Length: 161
Image (tube, rainbow, N blue to C red; front, side, top):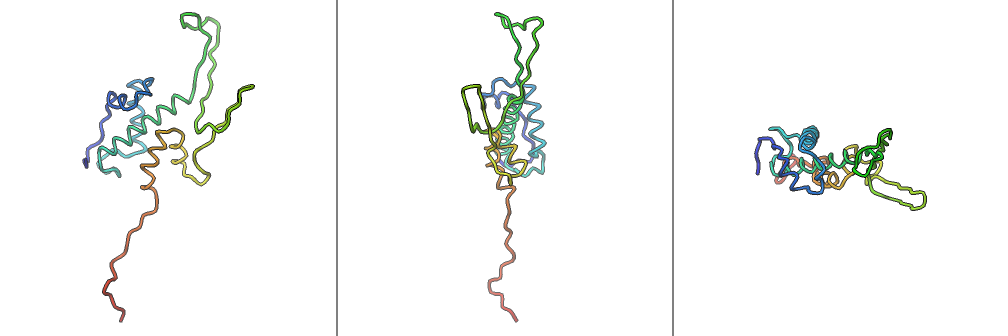
């Protein structure tokens, strides 16, 4: 549906579309939607004029950002049998990983990841290809960033003097 009005974020609708991201709160998802709107224009002059398509892209971007944020940091701390932190124990903060798992070992545990793009890829393409949701967004948006051909005036029937 072509409509100039902005997409309004519905957490319930987004959550139903991405049940695997149930760890995301309404407040987080709303913030991620605001971040997604910084990347994809959601105003009256948006490049994606079809509101349903724009909503799909924005919701996928929210899922992309949510997954990146989930993978960004994990905090582990020793807990008792009830799940409460043990007094005096320090939390261990670990950074996450993004990209495709390219190598894994078992002895002394070793993991390597790699980007799904090449060195000549744009920063946007590299960023989007860090999750499956972003990769889908890139496939949808890529034609908008490629070269476009605009034919000149027709020369049919034109004769040189």
